Amino acid sequence: MQFIETRGNDGVLEKKVNFSHAILNPSASFGGLFVPETLPFLGEEFLNKHLESSYKDLALDFLKEFNIDIKDEELQKAVDLYDNFDDKTNACPLIKIEDDLFVHEQYHGPTRAFKDMALQPFGSILSSLAKEKGEEYLILAATSGDTGPAALHTFRDKEGIKVVCLYPDGGTSDVQKLQMVCEDATNLKVIGINGNFDDAQAALKNLLASQSFKDELKKDGIKLSAANSVNFGRIIFQVIYHIHSYIELLRQNEIFMGEKIYLIVPSGNFGNALGGYYARLMGIPIEKILIASNENNILTQWISTGIYDIRDKELKLTSSPAMDILKSSNIERIIFDLFGPSRTKELMSDLNDKNIFILNENEIKKVQEVFNATYSDDEYASKTIKKYSEKSYIMDPHTATCLKAYEDLKDKDLKAVMYSTAEWTKFSSTVLNSLKEDENKYTDKEALEIISKDYNMKIPNSIKSLFSAKINHNTVINKQDIEEEITKFIRK
Ligand SMILES: *Cc1c(COP(=O)(O)O)cnc(C)c1O
Image 1 (cartoon, helix red, strand yellow):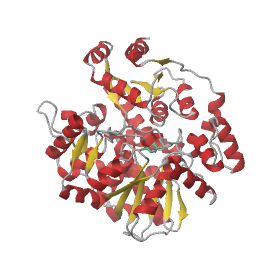
Image 2 (cartoon, protein in one colour; image 1 turned 30 degrees about the vertical axis):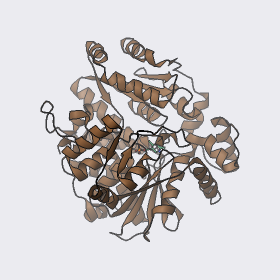
Image 3 (cartoon, helix red, strand yellow; image 1 turned 135 degrees about the horizontal axis):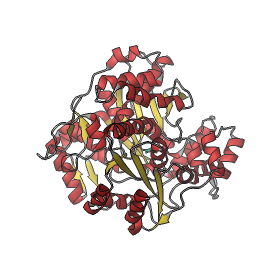
Image 4 (cartoon, helix red, strand yellow; image 1 turned 135 degrees about the vertical axis):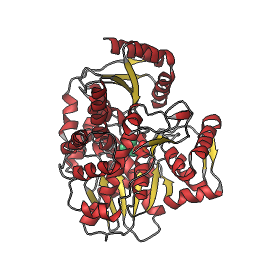
């Protein structure tokens, strides 16, 4: 399997690369992304073959279909990490909450959010490549709260990899912050920034673009790589769970083989939704993918009108921070698949230069054949959490946005799978406000204890133990000092 570039080739970089190249050096010509040249077709035969498979066996066979340049034993090691999820055989349980609506819980991994689904195996593969090549990579991550813990966890003590993780001080939940600052591996550095997530992300982008910074790293023999969701090494693992949710519906006798289903995806950078799009192309019977957003509703605007316009948009801070986004990177891969490289380059330059791009009538129709989108506000999420708690199901605020898409957009009498991307334990104070219909400021510790007692909910040990863990990272600095801090860490 070879990988090609979404914005075409600049004549300098290789025209086609293999998987390991695409994940170690994820930036393609003209600032584009890598995409698979072709996708294997799976369809019913593959589904039938895996009716009895564990999640990891399904994942392994899926990866083999892609025929990538990673040794079988490394693939095996990567998928073995799903053994550490709550249920060894079933990484993502599928729970029925309405006659035609099912929640696929993607948060049963070590850091209790869906980032683990891809970052756990991805980390294993990336570090095995670094080791094999005898190279040292620095991974820079900026996080609004879920990517950071998942990236740190997967790379802890991994040979050939150093990770620096920037987070906005005061901008994450207590639990998310503790998950980062209590990490104690020597190859990890966690830095709080005085500012918001945008500041952290902008600082990181500047560094990635800075030649003097790269030159400094070179002196130490270190290369830069990235673990954000534009890396195809994460996307490949995000196709698998969409196939798994279909198989779970078959197992639970909720659908017959070939029956179409809806997917409902709470979206930010569109990695999750892109995985569903690829699963559909690969022959999984998916009617449509319904996109749920919060008040940062750029995806709703784009999918309903074809216009992606961020000229006058400001980021709003919502109760679902992992979906607070203006530039959703992975829609580029959808645009490439539908309209090809030269059109993708054109539209992406418009977005870069003018902060707007516009699809024509024909193009809008093509997008709408697969996607439909809507959004909701924090009040809607709060009421939804309350409503389902009365049916004994506790969900987090990101998950709650899916119900709006279920209500507004599901226009056929087919079953729907909605994705739960975080456990309630990561956003417990917001969840408690919803349950109690109050606006008190609870610490996460208080909220966890109250919810666990009043609603008989289990708190996983990985969360409970955070409150007595030793804090190993207490660096909080201003943006302009980031580069110096990173250099210090590398040379220590
Ligand atoms: C990252 C994240 C999302 C958004 O997923 P994308 O793949 O970026 O669209 C949604 N919910 C939670 C809890 C997340 O951590």
